[in-house]
Image (tube, rainbow, N blue to C red; front, side, top):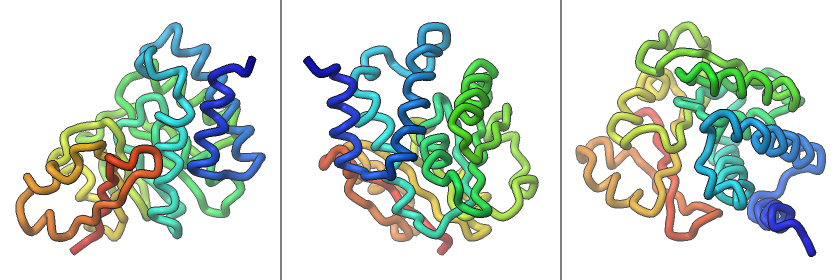
Length: 210
């Protein structure tokens, strides 16, 4: 009988195809997550059996929403979703860097080890997002956040990079349309809602300057 995790992996990679090399790196990441989750609260235990579809594919789909982006910010990286997944997809891409901003030191330790074993172009910043100096990261092409904060706060914190030309991509679940509708009209007009590949009821917020 197949391991349910193997079937979940196959389903995830059907939703968001990647190269064999990238798939192998993502599998290394999942293996490490399986070990570390027993000592650090990285993800809800109930979601690990569907980690590939629930977390890996859900994160991996974001790269296509900013296809030219090479320099990313991930606000509140947690276990590395979406930032580390994006960094793994960018292995070997010239100039690629993903800045993982995470204030929990134990999660930072995991992120550093995951970046090391997958050879992902990621740098971990052990700091709260609101305490960051955006100019210290240099040019940024895209900013992402997943399960980080309510949408108004997410956009407020991301604005420092969006105003400098970055595109923002934020998965917001099945209530995305209602969340956007509750924003001030000027902000809502600048937002695109893009259906999620992993959940047809969910959507991803994409926003650009202006």
